[in-house]
Image (cartoon, rainbow, N blue to C red; front, side):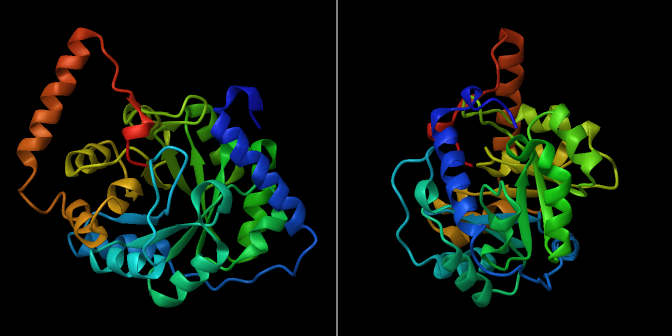
Length: 291
């Protein structure tokens, strides 16, 4: 695991809370056993239907967004699925994201798509908190424990999304046996988002791995950019949660099928070229950036 002093204060607080929850989980219950809904098959069905595979995230709040969404999470999840989401991500971190394992359980009962548990798992005991189809392991946070946690999750039946941010973390994920890999465009040290992160890491991901782009995807143009760079699927939170979740989801899953928005994409590319010419970077402040 990286030196905690290198992480943003909000992230250090999240990790501290995760370790406290891990200690509590170590004293609870038996290991879960999962019969998961197939995430890869869900991606394939979306592609066959002409949809971009989008994992829509039920995220009441976060340290990088203002305010919170008080709607019933189940109603939000159902709206996302109605809009074409291939799968859902549900936050279960309670202190900083307003999530809970109870919410995930309710959502999973209400929908028929795969559900990813989005949390900061740092100990095997945390895997047993709730049944989900997919569990997230963040390479940066679990460090050398990644192979053991990956094996423990698979032993329980979970499909595992291993999140990385750079090539070094990617190499560790591949060495550990990860087959579904997410590249987080958000730098957890500075909480800055740059879509170029995915573009720099994606070429080095093995061809037989499933590759998911995470964070900073806020428009059809961003969807097309990530897909062009090699994303098999996208994980989108704030851009969907901000407003009508069904309409927002539909706009993103139709980004490649609909002609609308092409001009926006061209304008984006032109602006990007101007930035390159002037030497400006493509990074963005997360306080205004979708996750």
